[in-house]
Image (cartoon, rainbow, N blue to C red; front, side):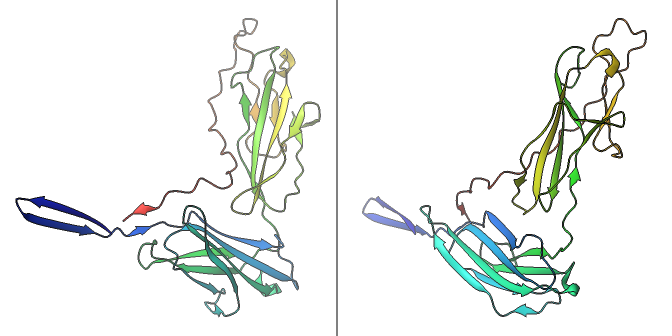
Length: 261
């Protein structure tokens, strides 16, 4: 509570205000152990709720059919040096064949959420893993030049488990020289991402060569002719720039300061 006292000609004025400070959680995420559920084995789900204020919070777990899970363990809330609170809530279940594709929900009640003042965090049970999302192939620099080194790159994101094989092709033939891959990184959503690169120095025979990964992908990136190309009567136009691929999300973002409401 804050107050302001004003004195004027033997009169006293007093005004008070109570600030209702709230901070929404900066992280709401369910992780699993093992990462890929296996039929007949125990699956541990952990809901992480971080950097919220005030301390009062209620946690509920639900199964696919809306049945409330009675048995779960809660760690926290515990505060940090910024007087913000965090907690972890875990529950266990034995995966059956009928569980594949179902959804488990962790419902969080907190005064910082808009009406009805709760938020659902969901987890989809998937015993098959997640196929990657393959972005567009991009070239750096955008306009290659003959005799100058360039790098073709591609982002492979949101896959699980983290084992993935990457192969580059030039006009349908495997390319091994100049290929290198980044280590896989675990995103905040529990999936993996990586970058793959192909470094080369374009020559005249690379004009209109198509590089792909794999050759069946629908978006191969043709190498345009060196610029300028005085020896060619009809040089190919500069291809339009592709939208830059999304970088793998970082872990985690800086926490916001508590908001004043």
